[in-house]
Length: 430
Image (tube, rainbow, N blue to C red; front, side, top):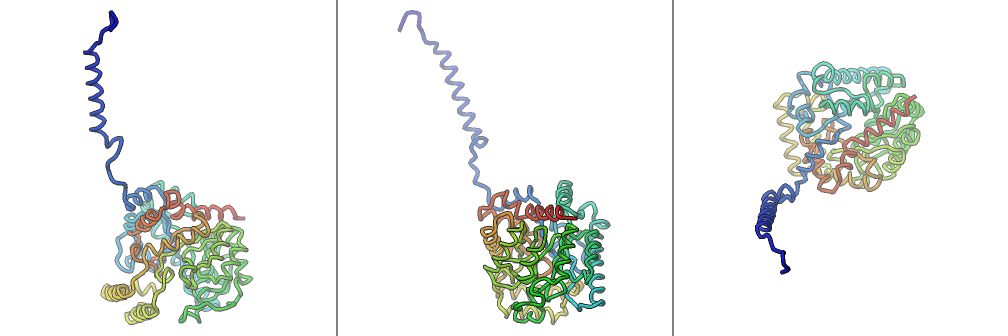
């Protein structure tokens, strides 16, 4: 060792001790830096995603007794209630299109007057919920901006859709009134042809559930084309669920704004007349529209005719021949029907959330993530294993997570795509 050089062993000992302390601290606190915890489950990831996206269901039917003591949406409901405000909160279902619907009836002045009267009663019921009963809990949205504002305020969101243009009679100007009352989409037709368009399920064909070649109008009628134009002028989205293939394709073609399919599934996976063919889905996407894949058992997979007949006969035997009859029935009658349906489902299982996701997958691969959404058709026949009421909504997101959908993609499926079309319809107004 050179003269004058020496080792300061004390200083090295101090440094070594300090290093040991730091290493020990890092090891002790290692979960802060390198977690030993298992990765989150699909359900945990879905819950996180649900807290950040806006989940919109584009089709929930209501009886004429909605927002009364018979069906109080502010209280947890029992069968046949599938959507109420507590379970919307529970399941993370942020926004719902409540439906103004009138069944297809006589195409004469009396029929049109009755349909309009039924429509006004349902508008009033929805507004009674938002304006009188629960204004601090749920608000009425008239635009995508309203949806975002109400969601940011911590409120649930109600929107209004019309199912069956029969409620417009032969008067396009009635759409102006419906729009002012809050309607933001118009379903052109329901079961049975009307003055507007051909139906995917003509009434005379219900028994064997096949479509009628050619239909009545070969698509839309002249009045139907005028009604689509009036809807465009107002900023009212056009909905082609329930329309025949020819009517849907023509509506997509003549509409200035993108068109929606509020509650249908994929014909290529299950060839039900109510489902959309790949040709229709591609045409819809090319125009900027969106198909809302629906959690309706019979549209997602094959349901044996024996089950359909048995359920129909069960309902008839209990006097449950309409939505109002279901909601107005005694608790004993409801119990008997629910038990009967449970027995049928045990014998012939319902479609599952995975089946719903299969249809979503097909539509996404075919048309792209920007043109697909999700709906339930609750209280109109919708409900599957895993998503049988609003409180189970999170299960759909969990299945999408399991299939590899990203948070951005799930946000689009649950609401962003639909809000984009709302904006486009508004932009097309005159």
